[in-house]
Amino acid sequence: MPLSNTQVIIMIALAALCTFATRVVPFVLFGGKKGVPKFIKYLGDILPTAIIGVLIIYCLSDFTKGDINIIAPKLIGVAVTAAMHIWKHNTLLSIAAGTISYMLLIHFVFV
Image 1 (tube, rainbow, N blue to C red):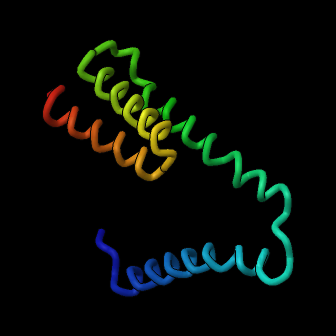
Image 2 (image 1 turned 90 degrees about the horizontal axis):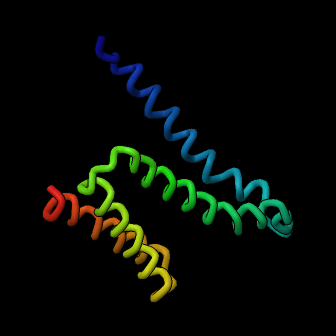
Image 3 (image 1 turned 45 degrees about the vertical axis):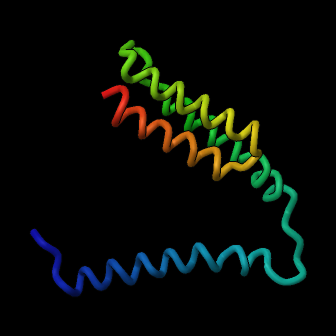
């Protein structure tokens, strides 16, 4: 059953409100002369590394299938990402290079 116009408008308004709230809350909590709590600084330091670790585990989780056409592009993508990060120390560039190499491999080499 399709949504009515009113339901769509309410849904868009709620999504906009939630998006706006997530942008404003940090300024309300940590704005002004208040310092950022040590726990928040700690999370800011540790979470990016933890998230990358979880993404790598998720990416490499289907190795049990044993198909070289699945395993090789992923390993090469991870290697390209790691090598680029060691070389340039730029997270965005590393992720982009790994993603591009993986996508090229799965579409043109390991078809």
